[in-house]
Length: 455
Image (tube, rainbow, N blue to C red; front, side):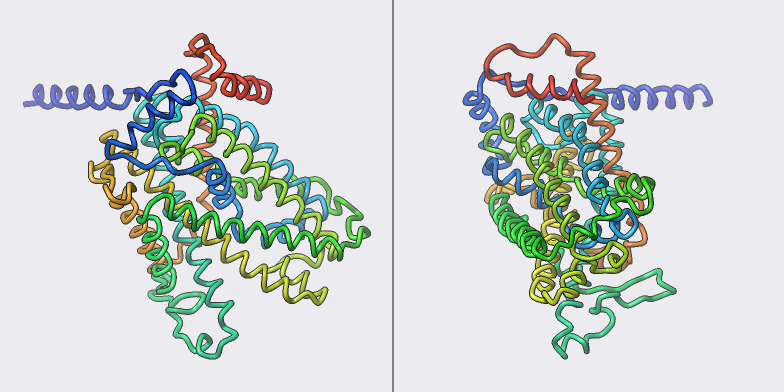
C-alpha cells in the first residue's frame, strides 16, 4: 500500500514537473512585412481575433491605460512634498520605465503573433509554471484594479452630479462612499457594477468598436490636459519654482517611486498583438510612443501646476482643480472633472480588455477551461472571457471597498516588468545567433541595439 502511494506521488510529481517545465513554441517571424501580415491574417480568418487595430489605435490604447485621473491629482500631491522638483520625479520614473518599454518593444517585435504579453513571453522563454505565476500576479493586479478604479469613477460621477438636488438625496448605497455593513466587511455600491456592465457590453461588441470608444475618450482627455497646460502657462509665476528642491532630494526620489506606476500601458499594447494589422512594426512603436507622450504630458502638467501656486498649497483630493479655482478659472476646473471621468473610464476599459485577452491565451494553452478560448464568430472577440472578467470586477466593486487593497496593486506590474526584462536577457543568451538577416529585421535589430545600450 505504502509502495503504491509512493509510486502514485512519484507519477504525479513526474507529470507536474514535465508540465511545469514545458516551454511554449511561439509562431516564428516571417520573411517580410507583407508575408507576415498574410500569415498572421490566417489566424483571424480561422475563428480567431480580428486584426483591425492600426498604429494610432495602439498609441491611444497605451495612453488610455496610463493616463487616468491621477494626472490631475498625483501631480499635485507629490509636488506638495517634492516641491517644483516633482518634474524630476516624473522624469526619473519615465527614465526607469525606458528599459521596460524597450524590452516589451523588442519582445513584441520578436513574438508578434499571439496575445498574452508578459505571460506569453515568459511561457516562450522560461516555462509553463513561470508563465502561470506571472498570470496570477497580473490577475490579482487587474481584478482589484478594475474594481477599485471603477469605484473611484462611480464616486467621481456621483460627487460631480451633486449640484442637482435629486442626486444629493440618493441613498448611501448609491452615494460616493457606498453603504458600509458588518463593520465595513461589506460596502454596497450600485453605480460601480452598472458602469462595469456597460463597459463589458462595449468590449463584447468587437475590438474596433471598443477601440473607437477608447480613442474618442483618450483624445478628449489629452485635449483637456493640453488645454490645462496652455491656460495654466499664462498663470505661471516663476518665483514659485524657487527653491526647486525645498525638502531635499529624498522626497524627489520617493516621489519617483510613487509615480512610477503612472506609466503602465506597456502590457496593454503588447496584449493586442493578435488584433493589430501590422504587429511586428506597430507594436514596438505604439509601446514607445505612448510612453514618451505620457511622460511629456506629466512633466508639462507638473511645470504648470508648481508655477501657478506655491507647492505648499498643493495637496488634498483635487490639487490641480483647486489651483485653477484660486486663479478664478472655474471653467478649467469643470474641464478637469470631465478629463478625470474620461481618464478613469479608459483605464478601466483597457484593463478589462487586457484581462480577457490573458484569459483567452491561457484557455488556448490548456491552463484554464477551454471556454475561455472561445471566440464569438460574429463579433470576433472572446465574449465568454470578457463577461467573466467584467463579472469578477462587478462583484468586487459592488460588495467590497477594494481600495483598501490598492497598496498591493504594484505586485502584478512589478512581476511582469521584471520577467519581461529577464526574458530579453535569456533570449540573448539562448538565441544570440538566431536573428534573421534581411531588410525586414532592421527595426528589430535596432531595438536590440538600443536595449543592449540601456540594459
